[in-house]
Image (spheres, rainbow, N blue to C red):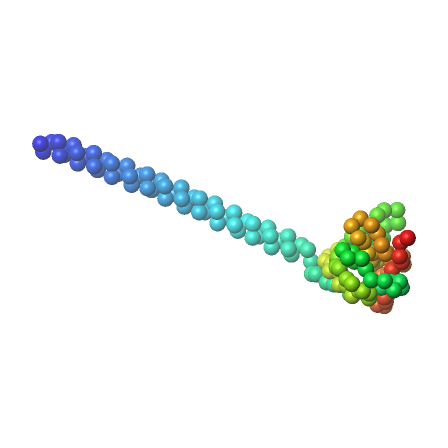
Length: 161
């Protein structure tokens, strides 16, 4: 009977040691998983911060737009103002900043936000303002206005017939 208890005891010790090994391995696996998760979070935070710092300082241009017609805008019409790099002659302009707003009656005071890193010394810039309803163009600006070199002025929109 003593031998049976000793064998049972050995089995208990072996079982206990086996549990310790399993728990230790699970702890190592859990710790490795935690390390992986923390490292992944750190990489995402660093990548997010570097992408934000690459955007440059944000600035804004305030413009005022109006039209001569004595009519209110149609419901659902949107005023779209863009700051564009128009330096390249035979190429489409590059949009630097964009603001969309709804308005009832002119004049429309609009702030166009842009990243200062997108402004290149020696390039020419222009503000374009248009009013659209769905895909239909209702009004548009027809004159170039460089907010960096010209004094502030009211951008007059022309009705599209």
